[in-house]
Image (cartoon, rainbow, N blue to C red; front, side):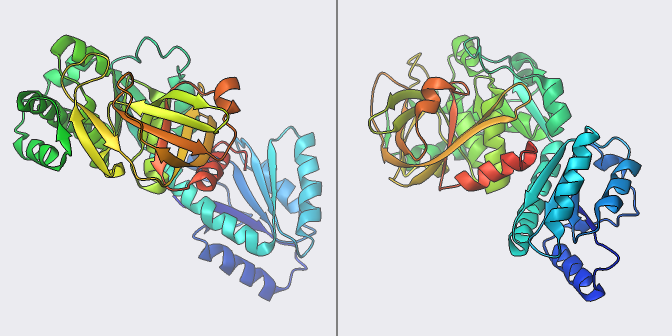
Length: 402
């Protein structure tokens, strides 16, 4: 659904100026709703976006807002001409007196059009997410004590549904599948393999089962993977890697905040991401180390097939990376509205045998005191390229910080 804009102009505004402004707004992809129209009921959870076209519009905006039912908040969009900002300031003061939440966004007229174009794309992402269902296959791992979410609050803000399902229930519904082709390709492209073909075959079959499970029920999935390896001796590392490379967002340990962070990267940037433990911090270098036993192969420059770090069983992936720009990202909190993001650069791919197999060292552009003083949990997400501004802008829009 495109972003809906309510443009308001004074009766003194020249018709050619008004028409030019309306045409410019339409060209951003936004949908125009006339000030005399009521918002559809389906839109009433979202804020009202009002384009303050000119001065002398204060009363018209006030009347429009009062006529709408269930207004959660108002965003006044002002530009630097036609006395738009003076009218917006007066109107914001009135809205505050009425205890109506209001954000004021002001920029040059050209800057406002760029914002509207970007917000329209963000609205499409939010509309897509609102229709999604996340599968939490098994409860979060016991050690994720700081990463709980409130499903009702997440549903209320994002619209997305989180479904907790027992691992046994979902895997028992699926017939064993033939996975020989994927397994052979996985082995052929590996730089080195240190586990048996039988172990890889079992991991590949689990991957095929998980793929079938997700495609039939969920838009994204996070797996309480340690239960699988402890009960069956088979890791979900290859399954998670394969799902992400096939465009299905998948995470580990039943971690919903990390999975949601990965899902946002997929929807906004259209690429996979790497979920890792923060295993090292160097304040002098402003670097962190991330490590995990699975990684989407599409992110790597090369990879090896190894055993699982903690258990020494089954299959995991040791991915290598080229030195390049990356973005580290995390969304957290009960309603998944808190976030942190920083661009950075890969400066190394360590090979520490006392850590998970895929390891990457990143020099961040933001100070790393965040990790020492106010971290959003252990797991963080890395994706290739510098997307800090884009992700930060999206989260500000989505959480109504603008």
